[in-house]
Amino acid sequence: MQLLASEPVSIGKILDISIRLYKASFNKLVGLILLMAAIYVSQSLMTERLIGDPSADGSQAHALMLARLPMAMGYLLVSSLVFFVIQLAIIYRIDNIVQQREDSFIDALQFGCKKFPAMLWAVILYTLAIMGGTILFVVPGIALTLSMMLYIYFIVVDSLSAYASLKASHNLVWGHWWRTLSVYMAPGVIAMVVYFALVALLAFLGSNDNMTAKILTSVISDLALAIFIPYFFVLGYVQFHDLKLRKSGGDLALRLAK
Image 1 (cartoon, rainbow, N blue to C red):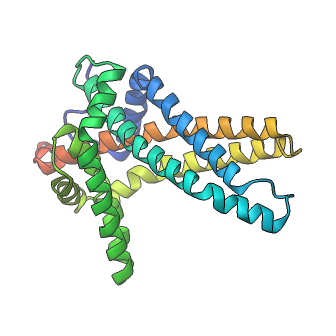
Image 2 (image 1 turned 120 degrees about the vertical axis):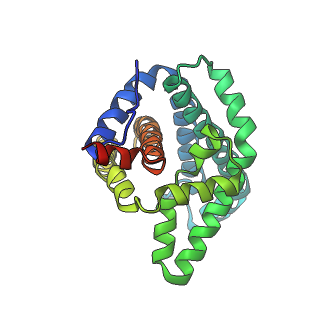
């Protein structure tokens, strides 16, 4: 079954394809989604532990927070690095589903570990580029945030290096910047509204200072976040494919045919 279009398509069609691809990929992404959710939950619990009991004495609470800070920051750093591996593994499995290649959960994690150095350097360069653009004129920072955000697909699909992937993403998106923004905007707004509505509801239900209720609220909201995020990796993959068709002349061929 062909999951991607063979020619450039409309934004509505991209969203439709992304939903169908996410459904087709979900069974293979469940393990990675649960791993992502576990990281989110553990980070939330670590943050809660760092903040401590708000009813405690001020100076005592402050001293306790400072004592816990190195461990908490260390854990947040390590878990964030693990999250890079999970992102790579997710896109690897999506690409294998589209290309009809067999893989396993372990294969995906091994691939993520293999590509981790390129991913780490790309994130560092991406962050520096955005910070530099924002400090200089703000607008370049915003433009680069979107134009270089598809770098991970070049790392996974085309095996490019960190710098080459960022440059390739910028060249791919530039000229289709507003179109790419439009692709992400509608599902992004919907996901934000649904997520924050869920968080508000759970916060209301668990507002009785019951620790069990607070933990359950955190687990459910973090699980929802872990389910939403892989969809946007799928959406990015579909947009990546569509832009490649446009850059390769597929868009011109389609317009000439009409």
